[in-house]
Image (cartoon, rainbow, N blue to C red):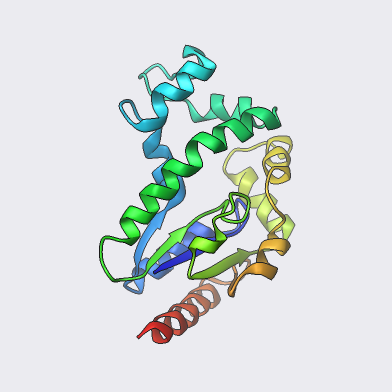
Length: 194
């Protein structure tokens, strides 16, 4: 069983995922899976270098995600190409982990709807916060407002994702309120499959 956790960047998906992990859930983050695919010897490494050349490499020989982001968030064609390479690799890796045992997998999948994966999820949780909180979080990561807007413009709106989800968690609140929401959603999902 796959429980997808989605929402825009800076919405708090990783925090919610860690809350579920603390409650005993088997968890995975699609971003971590994608980053693993960028390592030397992994499936995407040579493909991306062939497309964009050695300029996307860091000094240590790994793919420089900032360089790649600079390419794809300036060109819809390049972003579409990158997604066509990465999405099948990430999707297969997530399915492999989900199939390892009978426990449900709670997986953060930021681009669940954008990539058309919603039908693979048994339940969808959307994490939401207001736009100003989201922007403050992205700026705290060291992003410029312009870079943040470029990234936000490439994704579905958080409200659209919220409308399509089975459950919603509001992350622009106190830690205790967030923990309470996660506990309630987790218990509801687990009790529905027992």
